[in-house]
Length: 196
Length: 151
Length: 196
Image (cartoon, rainbow over all chains, first blue to last red; front, side, top):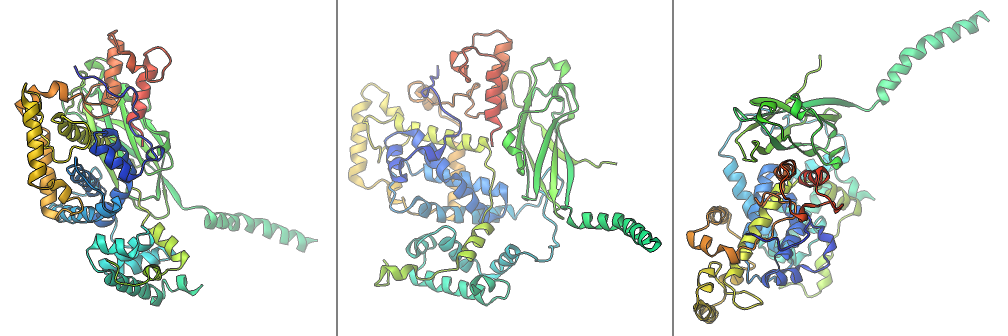
C-alpha cells in the first residue's frame, strides 16, 4: 500500500515562497529532501524553457529540451556540487540539447494541418515599429554576437560568467560585445537607441 | 438664410460618411474567430478528455470557451479563467454517464473563441493530453482543430 | 581567471537603458509548460532520488551511493556490505557525478543518454519490484487520485466515480476542507488539472 507522505502538497509550489538559495536547495536534495528539487525545478523552469525556445524557435522542442535538461540535472544527484550560478550550469546544457533537438527535428517534415503546428506565413509585414527593427538588426548579427549581447544585458551575466557558459576567453566576450554594440550603433534602424 | 441651410444640410450630409471614415480609421483592427476542437476516440465511448490549445502569437487572445456538440459535453468544460485574454488554455471535461450516453468517434468537444489583433494570421497548436473510457483507461484518440467559417 | 587587473573594467561596456529594455522585450517569449510536463519531471525526480535513497544506510549526503543499491540494503546482512561498498567507492575515486558537476553534456550523447535513462527508468526490474514496498513510499500529489504520477482530469474523473459509486472515499480527498467529500472536491481537482 502506498502511503501519502505529504499531507498537503500543491501541484505547483510557488517557488518564490521558498527563500532558500539554490545552494541550500541543492544541499537539501543531496540529503534526501525531494521537495527541494521541485522548488529548484519550478524556480528555473521558465528560464530554461524560454532559453530553449530562443535556440529552437519551436515550442514542442523547447518543452523536450526542458525535460532533457532537468533529467540531465537530476542524474547529477546525489553528489552534485554547485560551483557557479545554477543558470551557468544550465546554459550550455540547454544550448547543446537544443542543437541536438533542432537537428533531429529537421529530419522530419510534418503536414501543415491545423491540428499540427502551423508555420507562420513567409511574407513579413513591413518593419514599422522599433521592436521589429531591433529584431531585424539582431537577426543580422552572428549567433555568437547575438548571444553575448543577450547574456550580458538581458540575463545580466557578468563577463566572467558569459565566458564560462560559452567556453571562451573573457577578452573574446568583451570583443564580441563591443562589436555587437557597434553594429547596433551604426545601423540606422537602431541608432536611435544611442542618440539620447 | 438659404445659404446657411444649404451649408448645414451639406455638413450633415457629409458628417455621415466622414464620420464613418473616421470611425474606420480609428477602430482597432481586430477580428474574432471560433476554433472548433474535435476528439476522435474511434470506437471507444469518450468519458474524459484533456487538451491543450495554444496560439503561436500574442496577437491572439482567448475570449471564450464553450462546450461541444454531444449532450455529454455541451456544458462548458473546465479551464483556468486566467486563460482568458491569453493565447493558451488547458481544457478538460468528463462525464460519468453510461456508454450509451457518451460520444463515440469524432465529436466536437469544445469551441475556443479568439480575438485576433492586427493582420495576424496565427497558427495553433492543439495537443491531446488524455482521453479515457468509463473505467478511466486511457485510449488512443486524435485531436484536431478547425477554424469555423461563419457564413 | 579574469585577465584584467581592475574588476570594474569587466563591466564597463554599457548599453543604453532603452536598448536594454527593448532587448528584454524582444526576448520576452513565454512558453506555456503544461502541468503534465511539470508532473512528469517531478515524478522522475522522486523516482530517481528515492532509488538513491533506497540503498542509503546513513542519513546525510549520499555522494558515492550507487542508485540501485537498494538490492543490497534490504538483505539481512547487506547493511555491512553496503557500508563497505560506499567506503570502497569513496576511496577509489570521486563520484563521477561530482566530477561532472560543471561539465555540460555533449549534444548527441546527452540526449541519447537521457532517452536511455528515461526508457530504463520506466521499466522496473523484478528485483526493484520486490524491494519496492519499503523504498517506494512515493510521495504523490494530494490531487493525484488515481496514482499515476500526473494530476489531470482523470483524477477528477476517478474521484467523481468513487463518489457516485458510494464508495468509501479517503478523508484526504476533502480538498476544499468543508467536511464533506462531494462534487465540490471533484471540481477542485479538475481546476487544479487545468491550471496554467
